[in-house]
Amino acid sequence: MADTSLNPYLRAQQAFKEAVDTLGVEPAAYEILKQPLRSFEVAVPFVRDDGSVQVFTGYRVQHNDALGPTKGGLRFHSDVNMDEVKALAMWMSVKCALLNLPYGGGKGGIACDVDQLSEREIERLSREYIRAVSLVIGPDKDIPAPDVSTNPQIMAWMVDEYSRIRGENTFGLITGKPLVIGGSAGRVAATGRGLVFATRQLATELGIDFSKSRIAVQGFGNVGSVAAEISHQLGATVVAVSDKDGGLYNPAGINIQDLLEYKRVNRNLQGYPHAEPIDNKELLELPVDILFPAALENQITSDNAHNIQARIVGEGANGPTTPEADRILFDKGVMVVPDVLGNSGGVTVSYFEWVQNQTRFYWSEEEINQRLESYMSRAMADMHTMHERFGVTLRKSAYLVATERIAQAMRIRGWLR
Ligand code: NAD
Image (cartoon, rainbow, N blue to C red; front, side, top):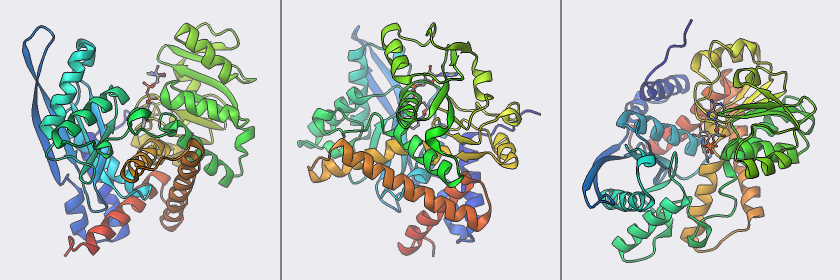
């Protein structure tokens, strides 16, 4: 039977409803959390290279700021729409609260196809977007960051535009910036590194020695390649990796350093001589201890969840496991590091970047990595406490930790009376 696929916004609402009911907190908490506090839709006119003016639609959503200013990425993609941005903002509220960051969730973006735009056009569009939302964002209000099809260069143009409007350098406006203008050491590798931290901790709790584990990684981009590389450095045997064109398998293990060099030279994984080709479906079902889905959403579904042999699924991607597959894995005893924890290394180091910008005091990469590990460990422990208290999946436990924290802030601020 096919999975029930729900609108992501309705799915996010449902998750908050379950958490509020399970915790037994005031029903008003759900009434507030079920929609964003503020949603902005803006027209973004910009000049094309041929001199014509085109207008795109931009969005910025601030879900809940009880714990602090809102925080979340900016996505440039033709599918961006208000419901998606709202759902992503709600999901950021969960991540920030779970990691105990002093932030609420936000998200934004522009509905556009960046492949149709020149670099100069992307710059003008990015600057116009900032002009359009400049009144509602700010280092103590709402702090954007990169997401799909946005990058440190775009963040640099945006922080420059905002600084011009304000008449002062305001590096704390945005995170994911280049190092030279207040970016943080360790930011690029943070998501993959955090995924390995969280998964290794869960493995240890389950009596699995991470350094002796066998690992398969779906997706060899920013998140997957870093997770594979760090796992390899920690002594684990990475037996399979894949990208959108297919995968590689070597039961004796793949030398990830060597593969990264091969990819750098050849631009893709295909043809690597020290492993056999494997398709993405086979990769997910290999006999491994740990599976890292780090590519796309909806990869583990009711069709293949029964065949997953890994003991731990560490979610690097957003939403790689459908709700139905989640239930199947839970019944099979497969533990899932949920995406809200698994890929939260990025927002955690973004928080460190903002702290460094606000204090003008910069930390070494070693300090960043140590702090990241301690934040992830604490979130994991908090999630476990809820898991033991309510006997629910780690994903539901993550929502319980986050909802309890946000509700507590709303209660003490007098919002729930
Ligand atoms: P990326 O574009 O750098 O890499 C994605 C990888 O997935 C590429 O190697 C691509 O070839 C591969 N891929 C695409 N389709 C595939 C398929 N069908 N099968 C196998 N591999 C496939 O992206 P990323 O930044 O690594 O992000 C990956 C996931 O992690 C996304 O879901 C993203 O939302 C999530 N995420 C990323 C970050 C971050 O800091 N980069 C933070 C939070 C969440």
